[in-house]
Length: 507
Image 1 (cartoon, rainbow, N blue to C red):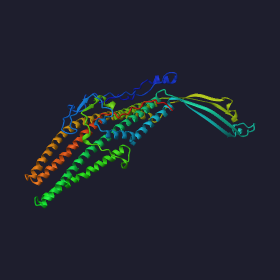
Image 2 (tube, one colour):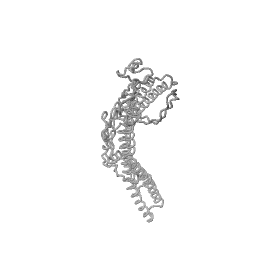
Image 3 (cartoon, rainbow, N blue to C red):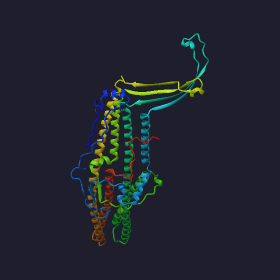
Image 4 (tube, rainbow, N blue to C red):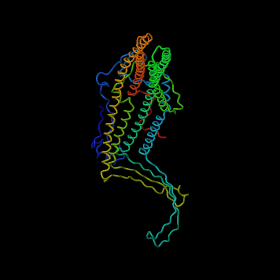
């Protein structure tokens, strides 16, 4: 379990008396209220799964049948999808990472968060200065001021030019904590972008691999249907010659119809994968040219890097995003704590006020300088309730972070177990398909020799067809679940990390 020190409701980083003294003495450094964020401790578990963690898988005959070895402690390679050895797959992933609207949206949100930080950093760290120019035409009634023995002057114009400067001293750290929260929000958007890149790459790889499996199944079914139609023609010819009964023809025709009935669903599934890939790569389905990836040419990685559980929280971007939200919640506690204490604002104005616009440049004749202190006295419990709310939000963010870590560990554990199961499934299905093919050859010879009935021969054909399709499906599962494991481990997507924490240069 990952642990983070919870912000205490009464403990502060400096005593109130010290902070008050520092606030009154502007030449001394200010204090910062609230908890100082600390990166959560890494998980201490030694393995991902319950029981013995698999180190190898069994092997099987045929394509994608090699045994896999899990190399514990080795990080997932950058551009992990290239390990499948398919240039067409690599092109699809590269196109998606370059053109996906989902990534453009995440990138825009990151830029927005960075600009929000820059805006607030400029407003909170530096003084504000404003220039004011005005011209006012006015009439003074001296009698209303109690002056009755002097005639009223005529209307006159008063011109004014002044510069006002103000700066709020960050005595108790409210501004620093607010900027800390904004920087954490930038971190969150950065890791959200990285999570979107990882998810996009994983979705493209999964869709492409599953489509390759579906295409292989479709090809096998079409080949079988073609053979069955040829056999149907032969059976009809034999029926016309009196060699077989009408029932044998109907049984063969029924088998052809059953096989062909499976074809539309597979074609629809392949088309749906095309539509999904088109969207992921930022294209309309009608303009997407789907590459044909042959299932048998895909390379199953025989060595599978598996990083340590203690490093998972630093590698998975969704966990880092949850950590950034926890950091933001910690800073928000500091802001709410500082709001309970006085705010000191320095302000000053200097300028000139003249009767003629041409005289404004004659020199400064008005100025003021001062300090304002604002101390909340009674707000109906609002400020203390806001601090308690910020602490509760921190507690919620901590629980969310811990849940995200546990979810990541569970996803890796599931993927490891699934890969071990996939290998065993493929081994069994490959053997079943081989035996079914042998049985079909024997049954075909016996049927031609009259040793078995036509119905028995049809049953053997159905079993061979089902076994072949199950083997091809198991081949695809091993590939897609290998990709799922690397995605769960937070595999990199070949993009250098962007600078995250502020301050960033101001334009």
